[in-house]
Image (tube, rainbow, N blue to C red; front, side, top):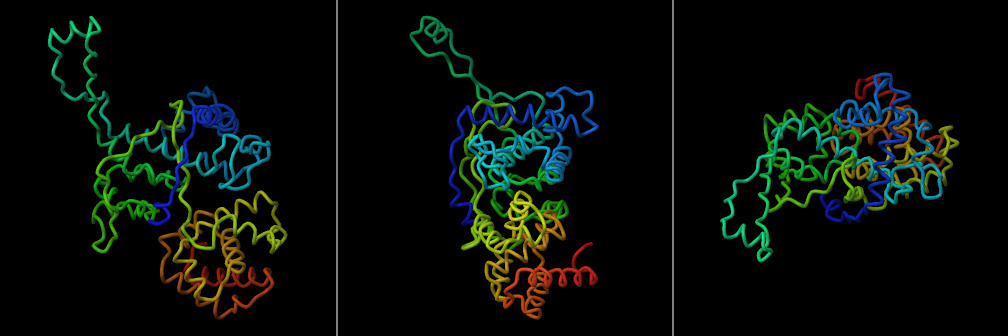
Length: 373
């Protein structure tokens, strides 16, 4: 993960781009929620927008509607040619990917929450010596520049947001935002990208109580915080950055998509291309250690794609991220790969056989309580 983030290339987002993102979020997107979320009835667009952005739990529910009923957003989530974008790595009409926009929203929600919980009601200005009468007169005569305005002292909300900003990327982080608040900023800085390994509130609570594990590979703490970009919904320019690549050699969402086409997985799973794109985007969240274990069991790209897509279709994206993400349980991973060997998955040529073998393994694991129902 560290190497992936070190190669993260940012690209700028001009004022026109951020304006289009804001206008879409505040307009057509909010209109969908006003229509389909009963709690928003009677609210104006601005009221609904602020209600969502000020409440991480509500923002999470809106994302659930987006995932459950993607057809509602087909005319909004489109590329420059007006075609519906099927997965998160495709560019939208604004020039950025859906993943970029998700990251912008998550950051904006987190920033609002941090400032609500941690920042004082009014900014605290740094103490400054009043300018002398002579300097004030010279400034009035434009013979000297006016004295600089006092700078606001950084609050804990500022420090926490800056430490986390580059790692606020995914919608699954929304319910974690309140649990980020009490974390020491020094711990967040030391963790760096490894904060993404903490996917459950219980893990963050343990981190708060116990501190960093003694064997953690601590990220170097930056000597100074990076410049803070404007957030979605308030700014006229900004730099959202791209999502970091997975860092997994030979396997990414695009490679998986091409393999799925060759294997005709849309027919196998009886879904359309858009849903297949979404499944691939979810399945590509498998961590490097999981892929290494699969490879050790003899699985190549074609088998891995079928296995991951089968798991995603059966257990759902959220559970797949827990099962096979960076925090995958070694016991479960070992059990899965052992079953792959026993079933001979690596030698199977028919994708339908790979799917059936994977389903048998998962059903057996459910019976034994290794995965939830």
